[in-house]
Length: 423
Image (cartoon, rainbow, N blue to C red; front, side):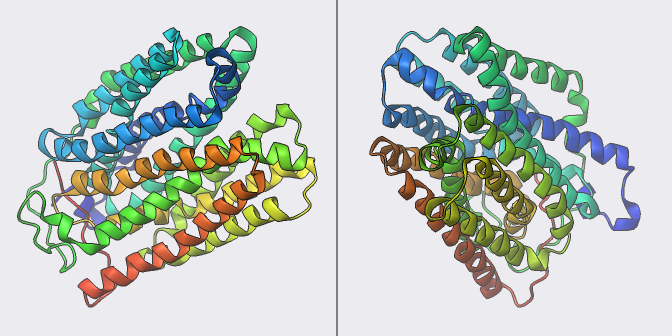
């Protein structure tokens, strides 16, 4: 049996699982950090390159379109050669992309660097979740998902907290060089600890449940499982909501509620830190897989209510960062349960492929959202930005329960399938 299918009494030492979770989480933090290199620097880039918010949003679209394509392909690569070389290669590409941003003298150079960054970013979810599903014991997997989400969220929080002060002190190009240094340091650390990134050997294949075993013989047969595509749709809308919060919600809030400029970047960092805090509680909630849809529904419902309040209600400027924090807290609590939705739809020996396809929905959503909401910003429709965010969060509630409905149509019980055992 694999580490992920051992009974709780045979759990490996906590230190062994913790080292895997820590290294994977650190790489995940760099991935999320690199996703937010551009957005906090939009005020500098807009002036430097004389471009609109729509054109700046197009850079994010390029990044996430490339990342989506790579994420799907890298899932197959992870299942074939293992996650370690894929993970290290992605970190190297992210460092190279940050240096490319720093050296850019034309908009086209920014776009080319966004392509390189997308190539690097696309490998992380298939590699990360294959390592976690394979090497972390089942009794600790909910907390592993929680830690994975927390480190990613802290990576998002670090980006504006680091990039904006460095840009103010030394310029945006120096900020980009600093970002490249962050990626390189983590790459060297993971190379030093590369022995811990090998998949644990398995002595017997896991027994698949009816849902997980549907036509699991061929490399593409998992695509016939409806729950996989329902998860893809859920992550598409999840990413749209996240993209709005990261790129446009702080600026829209500034215009609607007269938020001081110095607080705008702080709103995003507060959101991310509170989201990470919520994921701590979410790790405990995810220990019961049967209620993951309810957890997601409640979290997204509360977040939608906060977004509508920001759009339509009287909000004093000082309260805006607090509302960002509250929205991050309730959204973050749903994060580990969100990942459990995918795990429960994953057939045996296809972890990398399933997470690659499903999480490409994240990239596609983040690719399209900047085009729509960037245009709303250019048209000064700031209320529409927040109303649109609330609508997308509402769709997430329906999507989560649709995943459950489709999964139940495939199997008679609501017991979670065995954890994937993929190389």
